[in-house]
Image 1 (cartoon, helix red, strand yellow):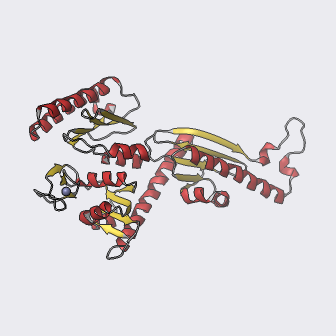
Image 2: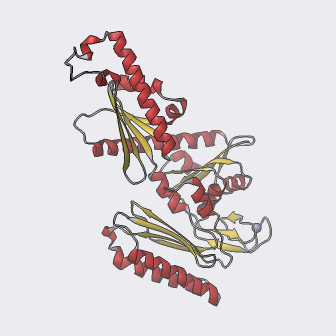
Image 3: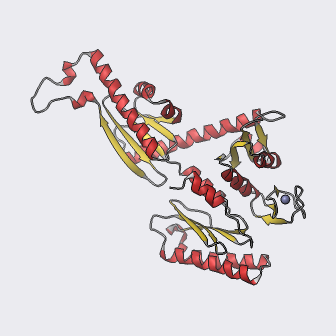
Length: 376
Ligand SMILES: [Zn+2]
């Protein structure tokens, strides 16, 4: 699990010699990676050496980082891993690796700061969540991490539990009056709701998908704690014939749809908040300026928007247009392959939320990047 703090730590990396290696490599069998990955690493490091006039020591350290990544690829990648992300800096001795359950586009970036954006994109797709299958007398709480189902907790309602098979007493179903049954269902929902809260405490899940008959789900929702209720992102209908795996695929898809609407809503709120004293910033320059002021609560970026730019070696200011000197401090500017990547990194450092959107028209109209501000 990659939490906010370890991401922040990662994003704060800085290499004085300018050689911090960020590598993203597909380790999917579909890509025949055992052959292609070493070739890719060699040709990319060759390209970097050609493009950058590095001194002898940084050159040697770059080679050291590449060799280290090569070793991880040769000996340490697990069979379930489809994509490997590595951040290496031989100068400071830091080496961080993340194995992910899906393919990454092969990419090698060598800059003074880590290129964390592909990792943020991956995490946005791998969001852990809680899935609750609800019925009046038997419900199950599932927790799903970025890889797979990790926890199952079944709850039988008091309604079923009190059936006494041994003594052959009158079945509870007949015994209890209807009003009593409702009270027992409420008790059952309370139990399940407590289990949901416990799961939220124990996992990094931030969203919940509920599944069941609509009226029953609506009833159950009233039993949820305020925190859990605010996390309910989607509902799926019941399909008695579906396997757990199928249900979870359906839940993940419902979550994706909900995420898409949420992105549209954020884009809309940003665009409504534009202008003086508004709570929105749009476009590269304005959003970056708001980030630098620590004003951004949520950064929204278009997955496909990756403009090259320039970063000040002195103060870290980033611009899109080529500039010899930093407009803020007069420092020397160095090229960055993805200026939005620097915006994302800054947002990570500030603890802002980062949302990655795809094909959201209102975001595209803003130039592919915008921010919802904490204060105007
Ligand atoms: Zn500067």
